[in-house]
Amino acid sequence: MSLAGARLIYWLCRLLFSGKRADEAFTRFIYFGFKAPGTAAVIAKNLSRIYRHALRREPTVAETESVLQEMAVVHARITISMVSPPEAWPRWLNDTSVDLLPVLKGLLEKGKGVILATPHFGNHAYFDVLSALGIPLNLLLLHGTSYESAATRRTLMRLWDVGSSAAGLLRALAANETVLLFDDLDYFPDGRTKHLFGAPFPPPHGPARLSLASGAPVLPVYSVLEGSRWHLVCEEPIFPEAASQSEIEDRLLRSMERRIATRPGHWILYNDVWDLEAVSREMGRQLAFVRLKRWLRSLIGG
Image (cartoon, rainbow, N blue to C red):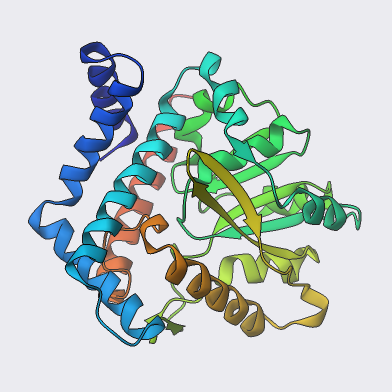
C-alpha cells in the first residue's frame, strides 16, 4: 500500500473512532492485509527460513500467528508516525529512548560522520529523533523527495532519492552528519550474493562502499519496541580502515541475522527477499518510476 493510501485509511479510522481505538482499528486493518493468502504465505515462508537457520526447527502455528500480529503492530506504528500531523510529533519523540546516543556521539567526535545501517526492522521513522537532538540526519529512500512535506517539521533532517544522492551523501558525511541507509534491499544489484539465514542474498554494498569512499564508520542500528516504547539501539561500529568491503558486508549480514532471529516480527518485509530475480525486477520497476518522476519534475521546473 502506498503512503497516500495508508494515510487515507488511517484518517478514515480517525473519523470512525477516537483516540487509541482509531490506532487499534488501523492496526487490525494492517493485520487482515497480512492475513491475505498470498501475503501470509510469503511471510510464513520467510519465517520458516529464519527459524530453520537460527533455531534448527520450523515455527509453530502459534509462533507464526504471533509474528503476524507483531508485524501488524510495528507496520501500523510506522505508518501512523509518518502520516501524523506535525503537532503530534512531540508525542512520538517522548515514546523513544535513544540508547545508542553515547556511541553515536563518540563516533561523531572523530569528525567523519557516521553511516547508520539498518534493515526494515522496527520503526525506522523514529530515527527522526536524532534531528530533534541536534544531530543532522540524511535519510536515503527510494522515493525520498516524496516525503519532503513530512520532513518540514524536522529541520535537521534531509531526504534523498536513490540513484541521485551519492555526491550529496558524501558531502553530508564530510560535514560530520549522519546518513541512514537500508541494508536489506539492493537497489542496484551487482550480481554478487552472500548468505543471509543460509540462503543467497544481495550483500549490503551501499553502506560498505559509502564507508570506504568517505572514511565514515558504519554503525548497525535497530529500533526495538518494548511495551509502548521504542528503543534505538546499535551494535559494534565497523571502521573502514580496519575492514574491506566484503568484511563490512559480512558483519552487517551477521548483525541482521542476530537481530531478526530475536524479533522476526519486527522485520517488515512481506515479499520473498530471497527470490533474487523477482526482487531485481521489482527494484527495476520502481527505479524506472523514480526516474520518470524526476524527468517529469525537470520538465515543469520542479
